Every structure is written in structure tokens, then in C-alpha cells.
Image (cartoon, rainbow over all chains, first blue to last red; front, side):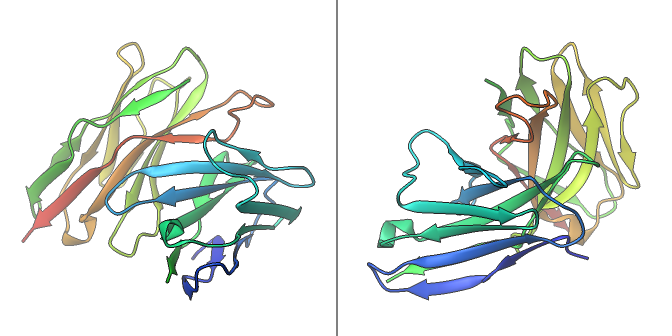
Amino acid sequence: GAVVSQHPSRVICKSGTSVKIECRSLDFQATTMFWYRQFPKKSLMLMATSNEGSKATYEQGVEKDKFLINHASLTLSTLTVTSAHPEDSSFYICSALDDRRYKAFFGQGTRLTVV
Amino acid sequence: AQTVTQSQPEMSVQEAETVTLSCTYDTSENNYYLFWYKQPPSRQMILVIRQEAYKQQNATENRFSVNFQKAAKSFSLKISDSQLGDTAMYFCAFMSNAAGGTSYGKLTFGQGTILTVHP
């Protein structure tokens, strides 16, 4: 069964609005979670590292004010796409690092469409 | 910084046959993990197999096995007795084992290989 749950799986929003995506680790505590973006038939591009209780670390070229990340508990990280534009339309995937097993487990992904 | 290269954009295989997907990587670290992930049309990322760099023995998981050549920085995936359900995009990935480092837990992915299993 899924050990990382990502919600929603699909969302359509209007330009200028904000969208929140949740990522939950279900059977382990994750001090570190990661957010990726993926274009069709392409690899995963790391956007940011989410650390429980501290600020997220963003990869070069990723706007931190546009992609707000909050990791308020050991099982939940959220990504908020603010003032969404059509070019933000993409597939977003989270992963949670299981420190004990040293494995990363992925959520189901969220397909965001901005109209 | 680490890099991961998958030089085969697409591969195909007949059902029940064996196929090998290639992966090379570059790193200056000595202690790390390597992974193969499968992404079927549902786009759920599924962990297929993991290899610890300090282990010489190649990892195996049922029909999936790897050929890990540390000196050559090569990490290929062999799928035996291919099944239709193996059709997916496969990603090779590198993870540093430097606890406390800035790369801790980060996965660096290759470009991916689309595998199609034909009946």
C-alpha cells in the first residue's frame, strides 16, 4: 500500500489564484521531504527540500515566493503555488525520506492545470 | 555535484524475454546509494531496487537484478521474464549517504528510459 499520500491528484485553477498540495507520510516520520516537478516524458526536476521545523531549501532558479513550502509536522509537507499562471501547469510529485530505511517514497503526484 | 546518465531513451522487449537498461553516474563520493524507480502510465513512482555502494554483492528483487560496477560507475538493471506490466518509464537515481550534508536524502535522476514490453 501507499506509504506517502499526496492530495489532490488533479486540480484545475484559474490564473492568479493559489493552490495548495499536501504530502503526508503515512507509516513513518519524515524530517525531510522533497518536491519535484515533471514534464511529460521527462525526468523529475527537484524544486526544493522541505525540512520539518525549518525553512525549505530551494534549488537554483525556483522562486521561493511563488512556491511556498511548509513542513509543520513530521508527517506533512505542503506546497502552495501562489498567483498561478498557465506556465505553472505541470505534474508535481513529493517524496518523503524514511531515515531508518534510507529510502525515498513518492506520493501519487498532482496534475495542476492553470486556465 | 553528481550526475546520472541514461543513454537509452527507449527500449522494447518481447514478453518473457530479458532486457537490460543502462545507467552511468559520476560522483566524487565513496558512500552512496543507487536506485531504480519505475513510473508506469499512472505516474506513480515505484521503487524497484536499491544498491548500497559499500556492498559488492549485486542487489536482486525477484525478476529484477542489477550489475553494479563501482569502479566504472555503472549501474545497469536487468529485467528477466519481462511482463506486460513492466511497461513503464524507468529512472536510475543517485543518493548521497553523507548524513548532515546538503545533499542528504536528495535523489539525482537520470533522463529516464521508456520500456515497452510487447506481447
